[in-house]
Structures are given as structure tokens and as C-alpha cells.
Amino acid sequence: MKILFLFGLSVVMTCIVTAQQSIDITKPMFGEAAMDERYQKFVEDSRKAAIQQSGSIDSAVMDLTNKAWMFFMQNDLETAMRRFNQAWLLNPEFPDAYFGFAALLEMQDKNVEALRFYFLGASKDKNNIRTIICFKKIAECKERLNDLAGAVNTLIKIRVLKPDDVFMFKKLGYLYTQLGQNTSAQEAFAKAIELDPKDPVTFYNRAFLRQNMDENDKAIIDFTHCIILDTTYVSAYINRGILEMKMENYDAGKQDFETGVRLDSKSGEIRRLLGIAKVSLDDLEGACEDFKIAKGLGDAEVDELIKEYCE
Image (cartoon, rainbow, N blue to C red):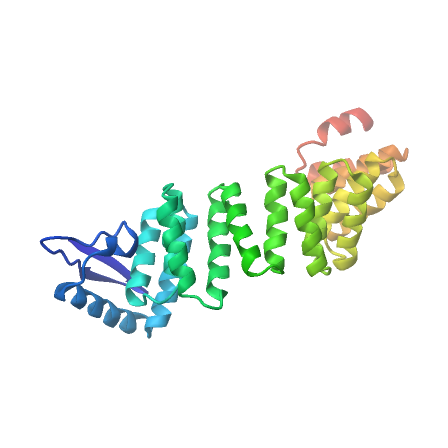
């Protein structure tokens, strides 16, 4: 039986098989096979191949763990397990492989076994630096696989280790929004803004949440904060303009859409919205001009407006 190792190039190694027990590449730590002379040779050959292909053990381990997370995100969990196993084989003291094992076991609903590997990973990382990095990776993998609740539960673990981790609160706010847990989302965004008041994205995300909750005045305030921090944030202008129109502040809406057109002249949607604002202000000639431009830019929703106002 053979195992394919990827250390930059493909190196084929002979898998060790004893009479009593064989290495199982689908399980953490190769199924924790007993070490014998042939297994020891297998380890030594693997280390030599890693140094030859990657320059050092550390480089090979990082390369393998990065590949493992990539395969995890692609839902190729078997290949992810193989890469984590290879990284563990080269350096059993590196924490990331243990966290990878734990997360993959969770995907199999083997939560008790997963907890053991979480503890093993933490025991190899006294300052919690790699632990926090791995929790963020695991949360990203679960989000990519549409396990949003699992991503939230993983990020919450960071709060115990680093209560002021701004990335965690920003991401929690986004995930809670996707899950419809609006109160938790607002709390997470508020904490993120407290920790990093100069990030326009967080203000935008909270504004979007408040917009969906019909808290229009608060949403406009947040969109405005976003724009103050980044005057080129097109989506903030557009969403603020939509809210201004909803609140019958047509001039303000028109101004936001005009700014949107200047920032993104190729968007048919923004041109259409500008035309709608002009209709509300009784500027049919200007509106029809914008509608025709929107049609030329490929906007699929403008035909009815042209028929209603311009023919």
C-alpha cells in the first residue's frame, strides 16, 4: 500500500504495515499505530523528503497545514485529514494538526474524540497564539461549508482566550446577522466598533442589519459613519439613498445616487435608482435619460419604467 505525500512535489512513500496494526491515513495520528522499526524508518524517510522538497521541516509543516485547511474548505475532508496527518508526522509538537483533527472529527459528530484533540492542541500552545489562529480557520471552514452555527460556536471559544479580539466580534456580528439573531448581531457589532471605531465595514454591516430591522434612522447614521470613514464606499451611498427615498427625502436620495454614479459609472442599477429619484422629484426628462442609460448598461429591470414614464 502506498501514500502520496505533497511537499511541493509528489513523493511516493511506502506505507508501513505490521502484522498487528496498520497505519490508517483516514484517522488522526494515522490511527495511533504502534511505533516499530519500519514505522520509525517511515518517519525518517518522510522528514528527509520534507527537507529535500521544502527546505526545512517547519516550511513543510506550514505548507501541509495550509493545504489541509484549503481541502477542508472545499469539503474534501479525507484529503484534509491526510495533510494534517503528514504535518503531525513531521512535527508532533505543532498545535495546528491537533486542532485540524478535532474539527474534522466534529464534522463526523465525534464530539468526545474531538474534545480530546482540542485539549491536545491547546497543550502544545502555551501562549494561545496558534490556538486562536486555528479557531479562526475552523470557523472559516465551517462558514464555507454553510455550518454557520458551528462557525459561531467556534468563534465564541476565542472570547475566553482573547476577550478583545476585534476580528471575532466583527465576524460574529456578520454570522449572527445571517442566522437572523439580530440582538446578538447588534451586540457583537457594538463591541467591534468599540474596539475598532475606524473600520467602515463594521458600520456598513451594522447599518445593513438595522436597515433589515426597519430601524431606518439608526441605519442612516451608520451608513453615514461608513461614508465618513471611506468616501468611496459605493454600497453605503446606495443603501443610504434607498432609505432616504423610503423616508421621502428624495433630494438626499438623489444626491446619494448621483455620487454612486460618479463612483461606478458602469452600474445600470445605480442609474435606474437615480432615475427613480428624479421621477419622485418630477424630473421626467432627466429620469428617462437615466433609464435609457441604465438599459444600455444592461439593467434588466428598467424596461417597465421606460414603458411607464418615457413612452
